[in-house]
Image (tube, rainbow, N blue to C red):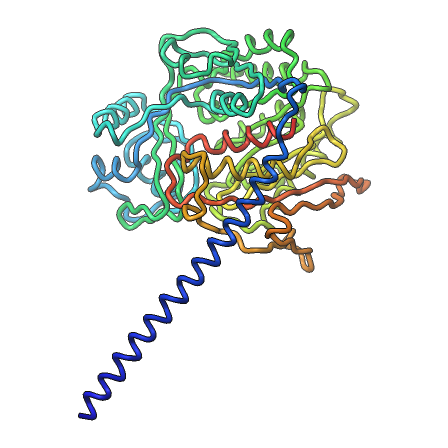
Length: 499
């Protein structure tokens, strides 16, 4: 009898504990949903302030270079189907260039387990064609074809945000109809487009013992057209009569690890430099970073491109890479996929200072050089934009909010944002620097996009420059449907808001 009572008591306790747990989980979920709804309402209200008056002409944007066709497939399904018996037991690190199947599997595993975006050259043309052939014979519902390339994707986003757009790119007759007819094209028709193989994966996907901590993509290409930047001269000619408000340079990562004839790459980068330096002072120049591994190319960009731009756009991996190149002359591979805001802001300041000091030390009165005035870093969890006070860049808070909303809409492939489809990654406050006693900013109903002003010191004479920094939380998509091209769309939407 005593045993029965004891068992009954245990059962009662278990039921009560389970009931309390259910109630508590429901309470936590409701709190999270309420916070998401509050943030979404605030972000939408800020975005709504960007409406351009009917009498104001559309901003003119020009962008280069290149285009391709993206073949998107599910990474783990593809690799399980063709390489299930060759999963690396351990990763030996990344590969700067992929020559064979073993190097591909090693490289993919490295970035997959780090949740880091990567773009790599496959030098073996025969193997690349074989991989594309493998992808094509998968179930048709499992593969998707898109127009690709940084420049075309950004061009379409600028057009969607109401800009008049000129694109410098060579395209085939098959690819051109995918571009809105309103976008002007400076470039020749070519017989066929380069193909990029996009291996997409979701957070929690597994491949052998490897687990992806976040949704991302691994891009493989064997380009023959894009590395040569063949549309540069045609875009330069078109710019003489187009007079854009903004010129965007992108797609230079296609030159990474490509086998050029001696001096050929430098000559092409000099053409990019001439294009940038030929723009009048009232045209803003922006450079969109990407996944680079070749130190020599990054050093060439430091000489031929970076001194002549007003703005930079990049993700957290690219930020860390650029900071290391500027500060120490070395590159990094995969870094923290979800860095603390304080860490990212400190790296942005370091890049900003390095670029200011580079131009101060080397300018020698060269009027063609420009002083960096804007940096936009987009991560999974937040958007951070730094602008120089008094510069031509306006609406920094609204630009950060717009970029954050674009991130969710693009990755979820839905214009409607459902609070229940959102994963919150950020806390309700953050430190503005990793330094001791750094101020903290709150994210909430009163301030969904915190902004503040501060002074940055640079140079031997410790010159001071006031900047504005805004941070917007991203309502992370729970079920990522597309990550390739997300950075291009996010960056373009932020730029469009600041013109």
